[in-house]
Amino acid sequence: MLPIPAEELNGSGTLGPYWTFYRAVAAEQLGRWLPERPSVLLDMSGGGGQWAAQAARSGHRVIEVIDFRIDGVAAQGKLRDADRVRQIRADDLGFLPDESIDAVVAEERAMSVELMAESAMGDVARVLRPGGRALVCVDSLVLGMAILAEQNYWAHLRQKGEVMLVPWPDGSITRCFSSAQLRELLTGAGLEVEWVRPRTVLSPSTVDHVLASDSRALAYLVRSELEANPEDDDTVGIHLVASARKSG
Image (tube, helix red, strand yellow):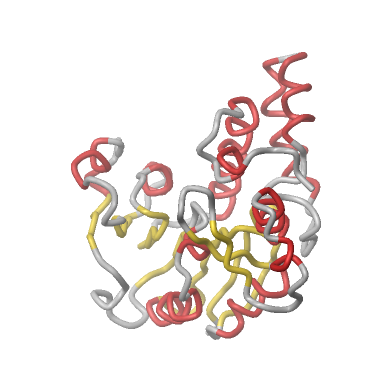
């Protein structure tokens, strides 16, 4: 499995070089994915501001749904392009009319934190315009099994083909997906899956080794990661990323 403590696997730990690499991969992936022309984008990533700010810098108008656990003023302060970003506190997307959004970003494992992911994705499909796209990041089964094994939940590891809800040491619960389950989540909402892949396939030890040898190698590592293109491989990587499109 992965010889990394749970507090590292959810991105809140101290594996500095690896998470620097991870964030660079995610930012480059989003940059390549964003619409080419100015669009209206919905950010469901929790209100941290990073993804909304990146989209705003690329010329898009962003509606950012703020997580109630994050102070709105603090989150607003992280945005360099706040004039292009409208922040809204909401439990769901009921405030948006049908087919009003060009693209949806659900980074930061948003659909794993949202245990009723089917309902949330149905709402995403509703607000997307025909031809609109969604970028979704979730916890992988690799991550889920590592966390369960770390806590000696061996009985849970024997369950096959079921929804995997994983209790974390901090008391939170997230939902983990195989690539097939993530595809099912998206197609079940009426979206057409473009691709599913691990966020990263390079291990933390590999990244640490390369960056320790040459700190300028970050761009090379990111490029190598994105060119690997291991679609539907859910045997590696702690997170899965998928892109889907609404037909029409």
